[in-house]
Amino acid sequence: MEIIGEKITVTTTKIAKAMKAREIELILELAKNQADAGIKYLDVSIGPATKDGPELMEWLVTNIQEKVDIPISLDSTNTAAIEAGLKVHKGQALINSASGQEGRKEPLFELAAKYNAQIVGLTMTDQGIPRDANERTVVAFDLITVAQCFGVKPEDIYFDPLILLISVQQDQARKAIDALAMFQELSDPPTKTTIGLTNIYNGTPEKVHKWVGGTFLGLMLKAGLTTPIADPKDKELLGVKDKTIQLIDDPSLKGSDQDFINIQKTMDIIDEKDLFAASYID
Image (cartoon, rainbow, N blue to C red):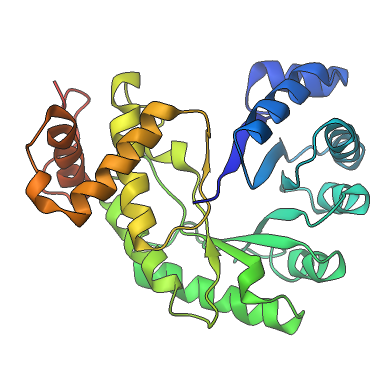
């Protein structure tokens, strides 16, 4: 499993302030810590950045790569900002992201081809996130078709089935897993795949984060997930992931210790055998 490091995002107050003030120290610290943990890409999210997106992305990419030897996932809805980052990026960058939405397909795949970048494809359209695995796969097929028109290879695409909060739309967890498995059948060689792991447990009590996140990650990996966006230093969650895979491979472990009991409870929630409640592991 390869990981895209998730910590540098404008949605975090301290990072937003550092970006606005062009203070690189905290950003470099987070970049170095995640690079040392062995991430594949460092996600740098600036959001829409409508005012100064291109200049901000260029500043971030230049200053991070000057001190940390890591390729960057250029995460923005501002296409001009993404291209500004691509122009100064050392090595192969990751564009985050294209989608099935109007104006988010051709321009982004064109940039991927122009700068030899890899690219995330979000399986959503202007109508929103699809209802089920089949609809997500239809969007993914459309994105592959567009990518081929620009010469972008399937193995340079990371499809994201889009993860919704388990506390709000519980039924979507299993549908996302099924979609990810279906993506593997769209091309030969298959595309890569990614998810924003925290999306599954955001808004839930902290005590269940490792159980929901780790169990879901294990199920996703067994379905073919290659590269989650996650915290590479969250050892407890990654430990739950490992035990989830053990349980899937050897069902006789069910109930053999408290960890396996909690993982099975979480799997039952993901499969809608039980309803999610904040107290489900109490």
